Length: 263
Image (cartoon, rainbow, N blue to C red; front, side):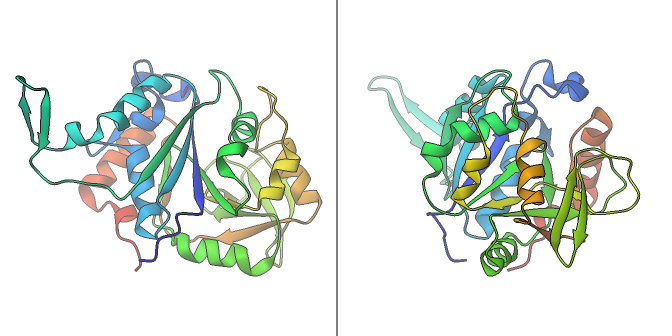
């Protein structure tokens, strides 16, 4: 798969995960495990499968745990030989990940819009991707990126259709006419995350702890007819509650559909 190292992938990993308190009391939600693997790594492996391997992680609540995980990733995931006489470490299993990670503290209680604005200098002036640190899907991210580049608009949002409770998209010929966060669900497409943005999207953001990406910025870019939907009708699930956590681990044991990706 062709690498796209110039395309940064932002992962929002700073929320407190209050609806999953059974797990997030002691760790940030992206570090909650599915099949013994932190869900954030499941997400990153999906992107890396399609050649998007340059990540920027927006840290907040218990962000030090995410930093420590990646700083010690090789030691945690390899057999290790340590020579204490000279402090030499040798990794024996040969496990490596073709992934680059930038870890940025974006504030303890900052909302998603404020977090993204604080990453602007790390993102640079190229088209970039973004997603939440708690959702997995068998989405073809290469097709998503190519679709975004084909329409010339500022933003693309992935729409999914589970029985759920997330931001609803009012769509007319793929142009998002209206964005409503958490309305009454009526079977329409909802916000599944997995965004693609042009750098001009930063003009819709401000450095404000209270700025929620899914409110003012996406609502405004939709009113400007610059938000387009990429429809994903395959598997998608987020880990919002303890029941979701149990469901995802059960699904992992049964089939793990988000690992069965197109080439």
